[in-house]
Amino acid sequence: MMIPATIEELATLVNREGKTVFLFTADWCGDCRFLKPLLPEIEAENPDFTFVEVNRDDYMEVAKKWNIYGIPSLVVLENGQEIGRFVNRERKTKMQINEFLAQLV
Image (cartoon, rainbow, N blue to C red; front, side, top):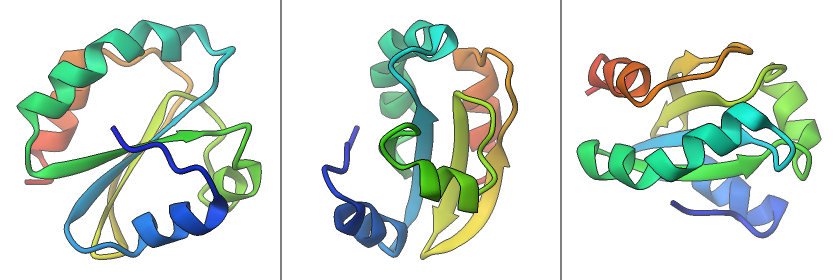
């Protein structure tokens, strides 16, 4: 899981080649904390994707621009273009995320 340290680093990840999953989270989010231990398994089971964790509070302007109002939320880009999103305010399970990503392979 990549974690951008600056807005510039995040911008480079947005425009990278391949499929990139941007996982919007926050430290205070209980559903995000529930998901965190599952992320290594989710990454291992989805090798076609690069995963980027975006702290919504650190990148609030990006979250607003991308219409991320519920977390945890996932936005998937391929070569800088959005190809899918799993955005809502509900807790997400490992199975739900894997099923979502399977549709984008």
